[in-house]
Each structure stands twice: as C-alpha cells, then as structure tokens.
Length: 134
Image 1 (cartoon, rainbow, N blue to C red):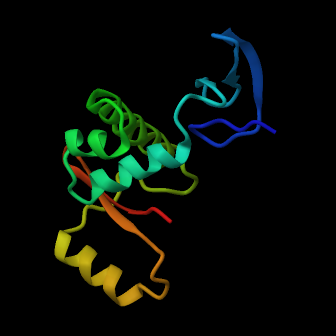
Image 2: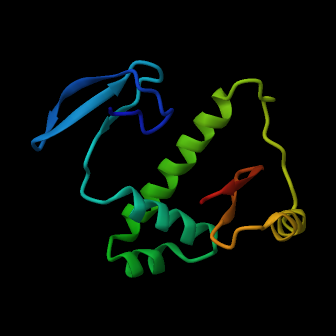
C-alpha cells in the first residue's frame, strides 16, 4: 500500500502519470508525489545525514554523484516535511524546544546504547531540532 511521503497517511489516490510513472495525491495533507523515482530514499537520507554532519553541499553531490542543486533540494524538502510533521503532531506545543549544542552532545553520549544510531541537529532560522536518523 502506498503511503504519503510527507505525513505517512495511507489515504492516497491515483493522480495521473508523469513520464510513465504513477502519481498520487494525499487526501490528508494534499501532497502530490510519485513512487519509484530516479534516486532511492536511502540516497536522499544519506545526503541529509551528511549535511547534518557538516559536510558541504557540493561535497555531498560529489560523493553521491548527483548535482549539488539536487542535494540542496533534498535537504529543503526534508526540512519542509519535518516542519509539517512538527506542526501537525498530536498534543505538541506550538514551538519545538531550542537546545544548545553542548546539551545535544551530552544527551547523545549519555543515551547512546546502540552504536548504529545516528543523531543530527537541524537548525532552521531560530529553531533547532534534534533528529534521530536511524
């Protein structure tokens, strides 16, 4: 079953085709998306993880063999999707907590039980959010 790439809802309907690939629209949030794009979600996730670990946009593009403009678009899309999820989460305050970097480092080091976990700090304007990436 196809799920929305923004809100994760299963309430999606077919919405035409582009270049022979099926398009969908989410009945919950209105997001228009396709399935089976040229680049895998894992590659996009890797780009965001690298960005959160202070790797430059052009360097990420070089390592992943994609355009730096495409990498920037992936990061912007990840931010928009995260902002949407933060805005629409149930029982949440209106503003995410802003934390300082030394608090993030202490939190991650104290609570790191599995070495495969990855954390990142997303800073957007005046807001900062700790992300658990794996």
